[in-house]
Amino acid sequence: MAPFRVGIAGCGHMAGNHAEALRLADGMDLVAVADIRPEAAEAFSARYGPFDRYASCGEMCRRANLDMAIVATQGPHHVEPTLEAADAGVHVLCEKPMALTLSDCDRMVETCNDAGVKLAINHQRRVSPFNAVAKTLMQESWGFGELVAIEIHFTSGRTAAYELMEVGTHFFDWARIFVGDVEWCTADFTAGGRLAGLDDVHLSSDEGRPDQREEGPLLGDRADIRFGAANGVLIRSLLGQWPHLPFKGLGSGIDLIGSEGRVIIRGEIPYSIWRFRGPYMTPALGHSYERIAVPAEEFGADGHPIDRREALLRPLVGMYAEMFEAIREDRDHASSGRHGRAAQEMVFAAWESHVTGRRVHLPQEYRGHPLVRWQRDAGRDPVGGWVEA
Image (cartoon, rainbow, N blue to C red; front, side):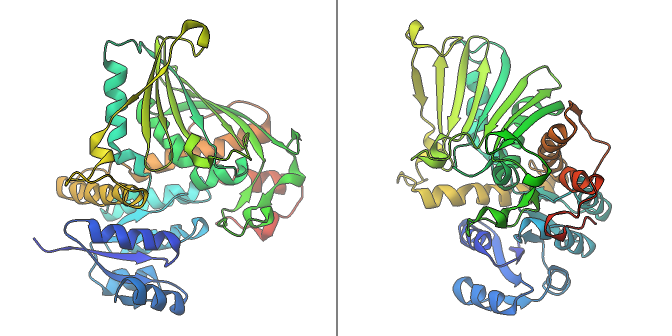
């Protein structure tokens, strides 16, 4: 079988991860890159290539005979490359956040569907074996009971505002693996210890951290967000509460809370999985955490321990393999555009709830950015001159 021909649009940091991961993937051949900055494409090709270089995703897809385009541009620039690839009949793996309005998410899903190409959003936890292990633990007789709630933990040390758009959809999509769609959302955001207001809407560049990507209008340094799933499970997430933790992302993860016990997944990559026997997390009952070994995620095929770099790349390899199988079987990718859109909608529903002061029901009728509308309704120009399509 001929190699699967792949091109990358956007030659930044994440593109480098994809270039390394594609070297580990069977049957994948990275042949082209595109960037509006010729010098970036040239430097990337010199480091990882050589590759054919193009000025746009559309040109790359039309001329390089691709099977899949990886859209690795920054969040505000995911839409057009995705539409260009679809127009050329090329399948798309797009980075998150999927887009900065739900209307753009809709366009991406509908255009790819009409073109007959697969759209996947790079929510890598969709292909993680830890989810299967967690589901097995939830069904075993040791004492989990019925799933009643999910707690989502963010401990990166970044603000709630930035965390929501940067990795929020990763975690919200992760929760959806276990409960499916959510029906409603309520949320409160604070800034400087008070309820966040119009004056607190800002861009990620305003936060003064040079390592942060631009993610459009943001709000809140801390947040308390609640979702209700269709099956009655409550999902809750606290963001920005621990800005000075020394272990940063190691405390991030989810707790699957049962009526009799908990299944806990922690860490960034690699993860660890634990179970907690007992209905309440209290030392008075003498319960303790028990770590569950997942050898397939901790050791390579030759038995060597997997280091952090390899652990980071392996989920990407899984996403590529899943794309190949989705095309072969003519089905949605496990991390489809529809799943990605649903996770992105949870982010916007949180801000919409804070802005309106009421419970928001999903799917939402308003498909724009809630913070942009809030500013415009108040007679203000959106921060940074932000303009919705």
